[in-house]
Length: 90
Image (cartoon, rainbow, N blue to C red; front, top):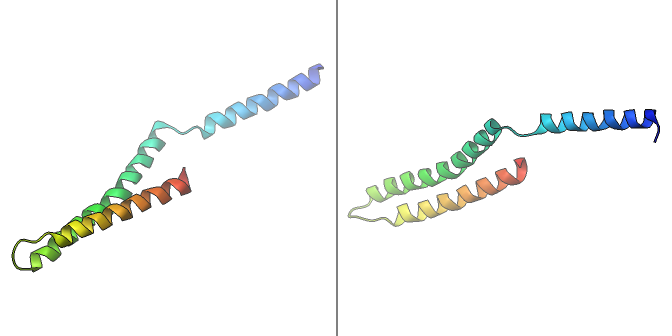
């Protein structure tokens, strides 16, 4: 291995290291990512609970069938949202 080849290898490796350091995810990126996941999961769940409670309040007597069903639907939608978000951006 001659001096010129060695110099080119060092330059190439240093460029790779600098690129790896720039592309490394910071704690802020992870925090924003987890915040996005929580919003994608919780909004459909809470919307289902609120809508179900409102629909149950329209009926006479104490019922909770709409609340339970829409919470389960919101849970399923939230899980699919998180799954597709992770598949796309991770």
